[in-house]
Image (cartoon, rainbow, N blue to C red):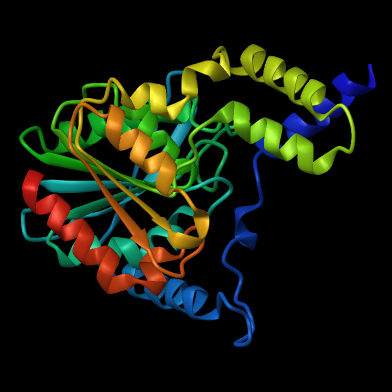
Length: 294
């Protein structure tokens, strides 16, 4: 009885709509993240001055989902769809990378995931529904530019969503980039349950996963990234900070992907700050990868 109650508490704590305004709050200069956060705020100011418009779609479950679209202005037929991470602020996460993609001459679409920011929704589904939302955004871009080329780049949960999409053939999508991707919804629940609860954490996670299936109509076993990538339709660039120790996982994904997989490990970087701390290395790796497919 108590395990089920705790499982519902865990589910709600992890997946209810977060307060994203707390994301990327400025930190003191002594904080190790100061330089990264400073770049975030500077980039947000710069990109907000670029021409942009708000787009929206209706999800399969009738939510209004919104995104900010930055047309390059040079008639580019290449669009990068940028998928933000768990409980993150879409514009703040993607302002710095977005400016990079604009500098390459590409259009940039930054969607707010369901239950984040300007998009509707009560619950995050950690990719189960979000990867279907991304297909709708791909279709939206194809309506705007039927003969274009699309790159999908996601970070953290967004990177996991990219891997979820890899098995789905989408019109005009040429390649995928997954930065520090989450690779298992089941592992997500089990790891957090173990951290929070002193005993019976596996049983609590089991009940939370049962609630997940009832709420979203998906079994978490459908979202094991290594199994999904074995049926990938696309070349993939995998990236992560060296402090995340994802090398073994990435080599496994590379081995099973029937298409090309490139790997870049960013020295002395943590989760999500590689673009900021190893900017030249990461951006050069992206450009070399995209030169093959765009």
